[in-house]
Image 1 (cartoon, helix red, strand yellow):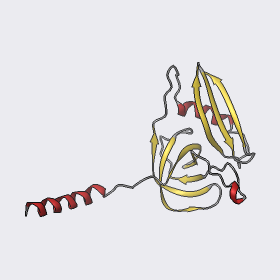
Image 2 (cartoon, rainbow, N blue to C red):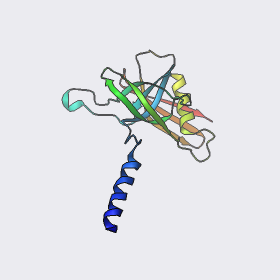
Image 3 (cartoon, helix red, strand yellow):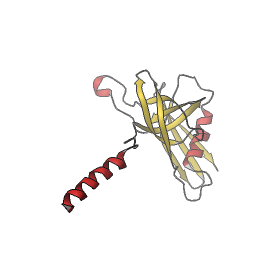
Length: 164
């Protein structure tokens, strides 16, 4: 009898613990632009569609409505989408919620990864509105930040270097 009670209690507790959890995020990437209450989230890793005649380097990007107020360009986020995502490029959808992942801090650096990335993204602010940048790499060595972004229109990498 005790076994059935414990089993029943375990099932009830398991059901309660999963209630309200959103499961894994639908999208993970860098916020490369913020426009009002929208954020452009560009996936961290590119896809290679060259075998099917597509681009060799393609970063998925989605404009999400519902940007948290504390969000900044350069933040790395997990996003849980609500409803369908329009399949335009960039896609368009609504964020049920977004979670900011703490940026990497580098030994000897005053800035963290988000702050360095935000500085590089500011350099792109006057570029063509149809260009969307992906984050290829962010490093800090011997007082020098190197940020490499990928221009989705020109299909090329662009590197910024700056000292702290």
